[in-house]
Length: 242
Image (cartoon, rainbow, N blue to C red; front, top):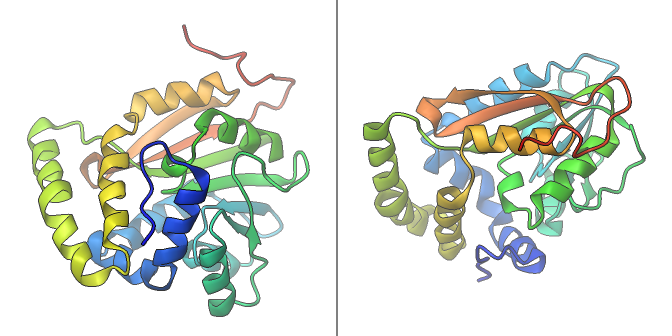
């Protein structure tokens, strides 16, 4: 079984997700204690897409989130780095236009989408700044980016309980339900090393996004970040904080 490291070698990351593709959705449901469905709904609400708008769903996996937009009549494109995930997604929903693509080199034209969203995928990208600039490039002026990602619970006692769950409980559950238990060791490590809410907001601004804001879910286990591409001319890096 493939197990990525915090170096996030792209082939290792893709291979790891290829390995878990078949059981990915059920494993997520179990490990999140069913909360992933609520997180997806909040993400959809934050994107606030309307029929006629075009949405890019990055790190779409098998299309669980994509199909919810498609069912609402949104023109949504699911894109994932893992060809294994894309293959399973095409089996599940052959009507969805799945594309295998790298977030650091998106296979889309400039200003193609009204909104871009990525859930639990940005943390796995080897060059996050490059990915954020690529998302900026393919978003129309005035368009929005919505990121749903694991984060840092602000209340220290709850953070301690959460750390215990990640370190002790989650690996035991993963041994039962996952097709690639070592992959969930990487999950724990990558969450631990990921920037907190404010740091990610600053990173968004450094890469050209404006009006960056976040909202904690489940006590800060997860945070929704939303930012906008300016209507006027802007160069990623121009809003860098010093």
